[in-house]
Image (cartoon, rainbow, N blue to C red; front, side, top):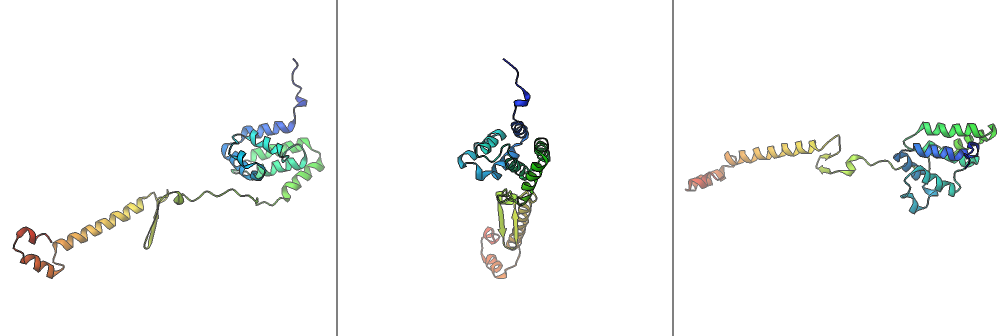
Length: 196
């Protein structure tokens, strides 16, 4: 049983192995989204690591050792969110070590010729208030997002309850409506006279 000759290991596979090992979960989800047109629909949700994604892209002939395929790999790594400059530098280092000057320029030119704004953009996360309650009453709007934290709704409701409670007490115990007070005073039952 002989040892494996390091020269026989495909450098592109080594690059993919490095990239796969350093992808975080959010990076992987971003790459799956960016490459979604090249991944069969049923397989998108099943991808759990970088190697699975890179294997699918190799089967689709999107990435590989050819300059245009390496250009595609560099482009998707650059578009990945959140950005990972360290992974971009590793792909560029691979390009520097593997290709001649004319091929390097072709790869970099191909990457730069693709529009900066990708055709498939990651969906922006919905505002926190969209996931929570939202109250609109008359002239004010209140929601339970972290900046509001529901406290403004509670304060407004508490102020309104105090206002209505004080108003009801004043109406109950004062002579605001003299006709009602006269009628209540004319009733002979003492308890009924103070009933309001």
